[in-house]
Image 1 (tube, helix red, strand yellow):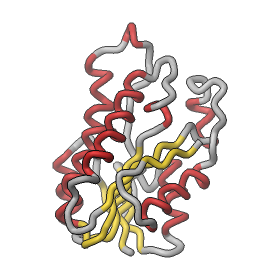
Image 2 (tube, rainbow, N blue to C red):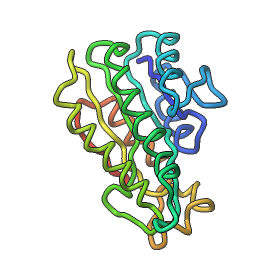
Image 3 (cartoon, rainbow, N blue to C red):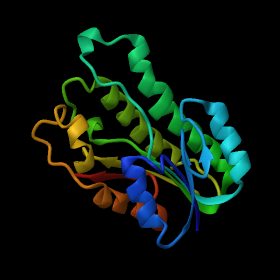
Length: 199
């Protein structure tokens, strides 16, 4: 399969690429590195990306920014970071994907454990992740030509504990390599409308 992987050089994206590249052709995309450049928060860059890459068999997003911080101090602008980047960026990707995926192709988005297990300072992430999962369930009902869509919802990654561990007190982290298995399952499997939880 020819797979477009957005966020290929992030902690999670590198593990997803290592897994899928063993069996498939990967087109890597990042804000600052990869075969192509694109920014989830810039819809025009996603459209330009897909025009350049052309038809693919699967699109995987392992990217998306959200703001972590106290709710009492959070501004609308800070909350909007996650809405514009992780949520609407991935939704836009899925909407565009309908025109660029081969029949039977798939889209895999990334949500996260905070959709169902919220933490202090994570209100924005919880809202964004929950919306992504609801979108996936609804979009799966309407996609044409046998197209599939799923989300992967990982807990905090072992490799990210130095940066985010203080937010996830008492959570058991998982390795990026283990999380990548859920992306493999989404891409190579047959299910649609699923949220693959990695905990």
